[in-house]
Length: 178
Image (cartoon, one colour):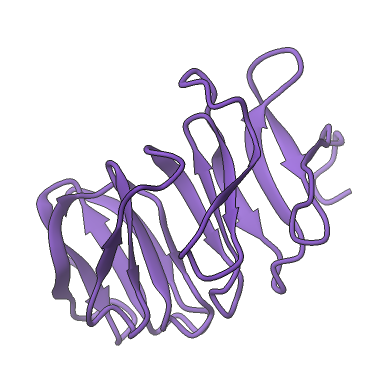
């Protein structure tokens, strides 16, 4: 692959479709052959590193400084959505069909149940001093986890069930996977 200042990456479940951003002001790069070749698509923006893909790679979402940019055709065309209840997106997660999205952002954790058309704050004060990082989703989108502010400072693991009615602090065990 090219030596570029790669900034973000997302992939379909089978690994054939990828979307990537660089730190340049340029369109996103999409690949339908597992990254062997890349095509520039979409608006010329300074991209953030947050990207998400549905399992089949048809639905994509990428973060720009004050917007999210969506594609519903494997990255062929892109639509910029502004006026979101958050500005700086740090992390994105998608359910396999792309209908449930989660955005870890400066000031809170937000969810969308309509593929990103509308968003609601789930947790967070809106303070620019709080960051919600590395949001991830279960296969059916019913359980989400994120790194967010902890009760004693720093980042803690927070989890939810039933498509995130409320996140709760989950202290990690001493052993991975237990």
